[in-house]
Image 1: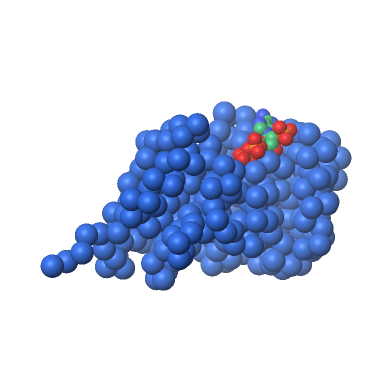
Image 2 (image 1 turned 135 degrees about the vertical axis):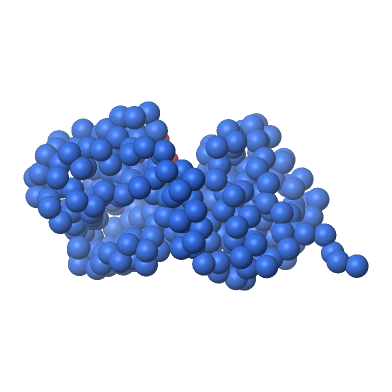
Length: 278
Ligand code: ATR
């Protein structure tokens, strides 16, 4: 008799908007893996207990999305180096008798930038807007590509300075307030603030975008985000939303769980049609 499919899922609050069940469903079909992947709406107060119950009940792996990525660090018995650097976990996997916490967000970003978009980061100047959890999650993988510099600009300068100092051993970093940004074009500008979520734009001075600058928003939506609109208005020829990062981080989680890396190109195409992102 066939054994039942292995159980996976995503814990979030809210979770109904999550594209992960759709993405992992396609991955499972294209790689022939016998698995289910379901969304679970889990309130913050019950997160740790529900994670333990999921794994105790035979569950094999979870994605963790807002607002649980920091709480997931505590629930893991062991962390990968990249999850420890990020101080946040987006993937939990059964490992022996324990739960392994990983973070595939940064790897997903780097894969989208380098493999899908064909960008070269080595020796290039990178500006990251924001100094919250999203920035912390992508800094180590970005610095791993040996950019000339990563400048972190934030509304609250002290947070940018603290992050720059925390990652200084991995490469050239600098933390500043937006008003201290020199009007010199960067090669890549990444929006990692949560401002897009409310349709706002961080107060980035003119001059950091040049004709060759690529702009990348970690967020995505049905229409262009405020950051993508702003970047285009500054003359940016290549301003992109983070749908590719979403698919690539999912592929990296899938590989951790199943030992197979799914192809992402076709899934990204389907999602672009579905979400309507250009
Ligand atoms: P996340 O986990 O999404 O990164 P976070 O840790 O709360 O969330 O960080 C949010 C980031 O977006 C911060 O850098 C925040 O700036 P502050 O550190 O000054 O709070 C930034 N942010 C949010 N709304 C913003 C806005 N309207 N303009 C500029 N920056 C904003």
